[in-house]
Image (cartoon, rainbow, N blue to C red):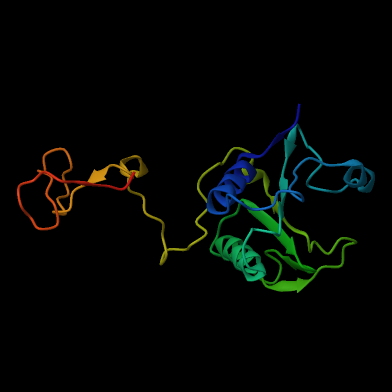
Length: 179
């Protein structure tokens, strides 16, 4: 049975987390009959591993958001993430050829309803987080399990030992819940 490479699983999960209401109509990873007939697609399993994903271009936001996301993936690859082999979207292909610059894609499908990401064999077993924001806009690495707990209005950082207070800073034990 075929499976998607770990890098593909990770990137798809990151996109799903960032765009939970996105359209998935054009999503895919395993080759259909058209890909199989062509014979040279990364959607075709090699040794049981598929090294490509398609993500629907409708992210349930402005169309510019799709271009921005593709640009983040391109910059991640350009910064040195060797798991990404190439990206195709809106009639353009981006790859290490010409240092990840966009150039005209001459394939039969211009990839306007979805964008395509192919992965190298390095992505087969490497499911690390993709740094789509770059070093300057790094996501918080704090423990997200603490989110939604009661935060007291006195701003105390240690939730377990702080005494809850209301806005007037009296001793009435009022707390604010963000859950």
